[in-house]
Image (cartoon, rainbow, N blue to C red):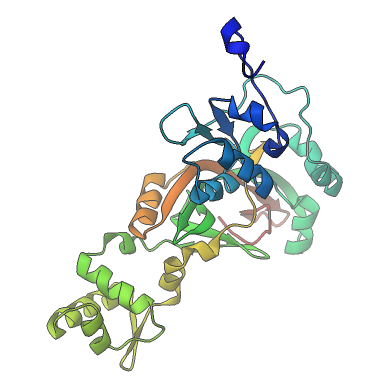
Length: 325
């Protein structure tokens, strides 16, 4: 049917989670392929072997495809990334995560009342908050903070970053969620300022004389640029040594803040907090820093709005109860 069906007006759609197990004769007759995230090396090789133009770089991108993103091969001259919308019909085989349900029955019941959103799964319930705050809770409800989830790469390193859209911050997750303010001034550097920043970022300590030589500047030019960058808080000087402040250094190696958890489409209740940061500013910031963004999607970070018996209120993230809004 795969090789002769076209003569009789027949089409064939083959769906599999294991491309490597599809017969090569069948796979070779598929003129178009829609590829979602694949991580198995054998399956990636099968996809690469079935089409010309699929290289190692494309395989790396297939490994890191987020939910809702697909690679279409064969329908155009080059492999093309497309967005897949959320299904509008109900899914008869849909089920919640067994692990998640078994961990917290209270949260599971709460999530049943929510709508389908692209968000991170909450880890903490009301009892956890009361223990961590050492206070009696009068009331607590989930609220959703807007975030921008970004897949990208720089120098062949693949990363997944999460940015707050309430404040201009990049979020990170170790044991707790934390945030670092985005220095937007980094995206507005002049060509000479970029030269100096690049020189200093390659060495822990650099002298003005080294900057002058490596950036091919006169002493006056180097001195003027260094002074302006220091006043802007983008450089610091200790004695004769120049270096990057910690809050700037972290953005030179932004891939190290890659978020270990990924958002998913889940049922989640809660008021959605109003977005106050334009995601285009964040994407432009990443572009200026040399990061190639392969996919971006707005989502939600669940938070608890807790009111205590002493009438005090607080909003913190529902994953670690560390990040305050």
